Amino acid sequence: MTTQPDETAFQAERDIKRLTTNQRILRRFLRHRLAVVSVMILLVMIILTAGAPLFTRYQPNAIDVRNLRKPPSATHLLGTDTIGRDVWTRLIYGGRVSLAVGLVAASISVTIGTVIGLVSGFSGGRVDFWLMRFTEVVMTIPTLIIMMTLAAVLG
Image 1: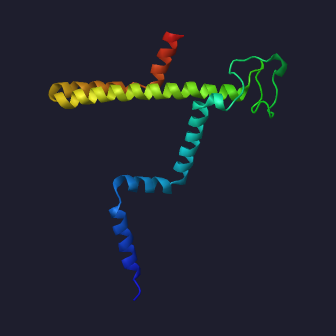
Image 2: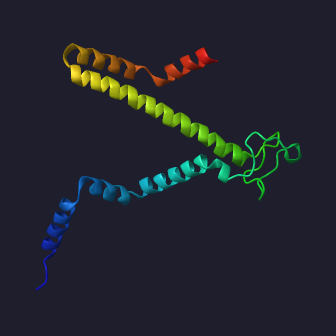
Image 3: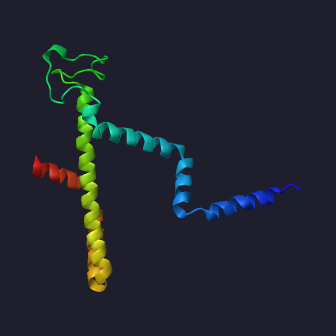
């Protein structure tokens, strides 16, 4: 006896319902090719920047006057700059700084948000009301104004 197409569809739906939430999330993520490729690129960048000393033989600030403005070659993958520094080395070491700044900024943001959320949630009432109004005001300040202010203050 053969199964009807409707029974197959119902069986597939039952199989999906048996999956846990995390399995469904992973399954949906893996179907999105652009997301998978993006994660792969991000992982490669993290590995390169975290292991920068392993992927280059030069120091990021080492000046070599014999190799001024050299084009890309086997010894200098992206060439050299105007004072002879290896561009590939400077790129991956610069990525380390960017990665560290991003992680610290995200950590600070999560910490502040968690503290405000905990205080607001546990206390409730007026404290909750005023903390949420404060949060809304802070969220309305454009990022560009903050960055311009910081640039003026810090030089």
